Length: 186
Image (cartoon, rainbow, N blue to C red; front, side, top):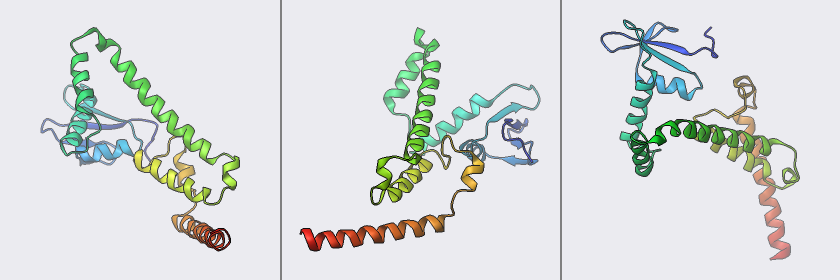
C-alpha cells in the first residue's frame, strides 16, 4: 500500500508521457489533478535529467481549468500576479498567497469544528439538517475533503442513507410543527 504522507512520484519520459511509479501505469494531467484533489502531494520529475517539473505541470493544470471556463483566478488577480514578477513585490507575493490559502483552510476547518461542537443552536429544530447541508457544501468546495477531518474518520462517518433518513425525519417533524403553528397562530 502506498504511503500517503510521501509525495506520489510521477516520472516524465522523453516522449512527454507521465508515469505513475506507484501503480506502474501512465497518467494524464486530469489524473494528477485528481490525486491532488484527493489530498495527495505529487512530485513530477524528468526521468533523464532528474529536474523537478512539479511547478510547471501544476501551472499547466491550472491553465487548463481556467481555459475551460472553470475560473477561480479573476483577470485583476492574474494582472497583479504578472506585475508582481517585474516588481519588488515578487518576494512578498508567494508568502502572501501561501498565508492566504492557509487562512482559508484553517477557517474552513474551524467553521466545521464550530458546527459540530455542542452549542445552544443544536437544540434548534432543523439544525442537524442545516449542519449536514453546510458540511456537503464544504465538501463540494474542497473537492470532497473536509479540512481537519482524517480520511479514516470520514470513512467511518454515518452512511449517506442513514443521513438521508435522519434528514427526512427532521423535515417531517419541522413540517408538523409548522402545520401546528399555522393552525394556532395564523
